Length: 234
Image (tube, rainbow, N blue to C red):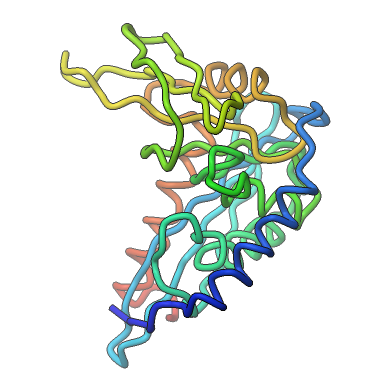
């Protein structure tokens, strides 16, 4: 895996300032439709030359959740893994994959945080602001905030950070009669906190993640396998 030196304090401050600009442009007014719902997710591969590449896969659906377009993008990573700064590592490939979809989404589910972020500018918010798209962030880990654990499947508990309601912890699924870790749902851009939860619930099918997230995850890993097997050029 490629490695980079940790950003200097000055560079961190510059990146934090960029995220604060994104946060200032986030709008939580509902401005979405479900005409074309899409999901985007990322995976990583390492080349023989030591380069690390990020693959992003996007899948778009019609209003009946039938896939109508798939795309992918492959870019060399230029930034290390640092919690809270994933938009600089994964954002360029994710945005490129979304732009390559044949039909522009009217709502995008993103594997990552939205406003549930230390500077309220997670990957979903960054993509939403950059591409002028309504976005919902869905993540498996809690980056920041406090909550009371939801008790039963279907329950959701509000997530608070610095006194503000930034999302929900949703107990979405049980596998093999065992309790499954809940997911975190938050608005990214042009989606309200309440609508983000409603959209996540309504797009759940037979998986832990909402269907657009699940299908994007399946797609990007299929692309990864095809690249590693030589079916697709690296």
